[in-house]
Length: 390
Ligand SMILES: [Zn+2]
Image 1 (spheres, rainbow, N blue to C red):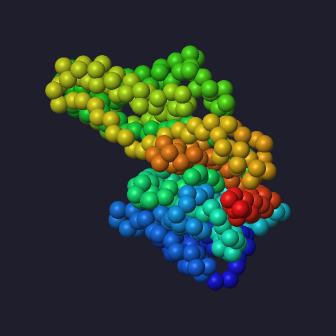
Image 2 (image 1 turned 120 degrees about the horizontal axis):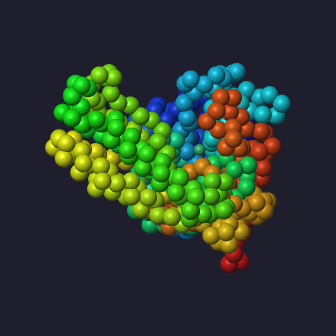
Image 3 (image 1 turned 90 degrees about the vertical axis):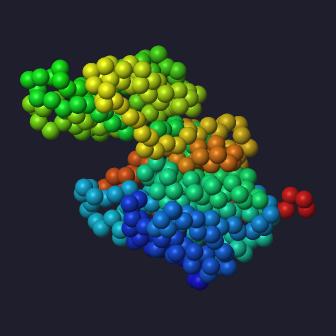
């Protein structure tokens, strides 16, 4: 396998359309073959129906905990977005590389892969683990099977760097999130006889108003964490549908809401408060009108927040690698909370590109950002090649 630079690797990675609803296997096969070309064996951790896979590989000694470089291989849809160029062909303009996933986050994966030859040639005393997931963009879904596999590993990574786009600053904390779907079951009736029915939309509206009141209370009374741009936990309703005609009492209404918590507030308590209002306040009233009516709330996805102490060893280490003094919270979620909560692996977020360009048409990453990420990986390789016992 010939060496490849990060830009040509990025071109190849972007050319695989790995929008979350599609398979990522062609891209994973490409990485497996690429790694094999340098003598690196990797493990695919498949989704239940085998249409997608995570990848896990270790370079260096297998019996020592190392540094894990982690990223997701899926990208958000381009559907409905107006792009000036083909989103799956990288186009360079004035030092910026345009294409879906360039910033979020195939740029980081390309940089990591471009340095595999150096990782292999270096006499690594501490290993580097690669962990690439699927279905991150739909709520950190795919990585859970990877976590399950990793729980059984005899040696787990000692720390993790998630290369999501932070413009190479070191992110130590982000909010957690729960997304849920509420199904309100009413009873239909002619609208001239509303007392014979149970109006699902109106009960949904009461619950939505409760969610709104609760969100407003958190915004006004806290608790607060001033390190976040939005320094309190938030709730919002994002999707709703119900009813068929204005002269029919509607028998069903569905809506989706989400909660994002600051790390010092327990997201389960926030969620249970909404559940309790539906179960203990609204549902008894509905049932008194008609026994078959009711409310069910189903979780769509969730991930925990990340809260790595700013004075942790990993923070010092990654600041040095990234040649960066900026440490802070990040506004968006990552798989970091899962690695740190589920496996106890200290985790930070640090990668090239900006989240401002992510998820939008004409997504891009600047070449100097890729260069800075390359330097970070180069410093990582040399720092892990030093024999501390020598
Ligand atoms: Zn991302």
